Image (tube, rainbow, N blue to C red; front, side, top):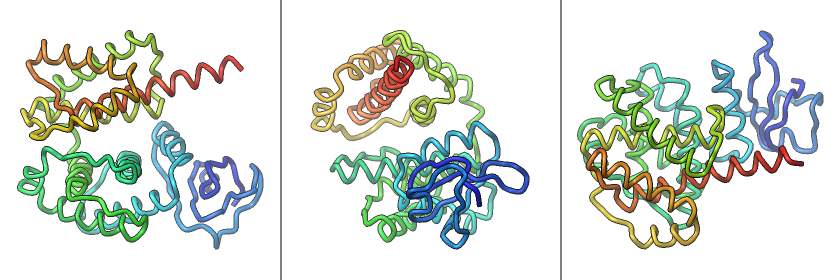
Length: 286
């Protein structure tokens, strides 16, 4: 196994027999190695092959900063879901669920849990997926040492629902329009160039998709989180000012008021996009 690209100490890219890029993972397999070096096959724990160059690129970019334990836990959860549901799951779940789980663990370690406003509905309408979400919490506890709450079991369940069913066609036009409007507000407020292949952009779009589905489904957050919002406003003032423009626009056009928790999510994602854009601009200036 010759290294084509090093992602981190625990992950690297090789070429398979068909010449396709494959991600291999194992503890320390790329430590002190360089491109062209050989990886011992016995040191590899997992091999990931994703269809499509764009998806593979996003997966590799995400792995650069993700702890090995988070990725292995996610893969174990997805394998369990495939065996239990016996249904085709969109390969995109390797990106979206892994990213969600890693972000959730980071949030809980910082004592910033988030309430799931759709938890009751998820339990009622998607009992099989929710049961998988509960089992996923046990895997995360065993693999990563973090005990997430049942709110996260609900969020994980929705990833399985989305991976099986795809978009709700009755709302697709409304959802697309809303995402376009929000992206334009952020883009012009900060004068950003938002490339579709950006990881932060991809995360934001994914968040907006779930937000729009909830908004047009008339499911409001039933709890507020003013204390965490106050902290977030102080830490991310620029992103908050932009998020305020977004919320005012949504209220005026769609008569929908964002809750504190939804506002927190909006600020977090806007801050990510701004940071990534500025880092890329600094890199070009060097």
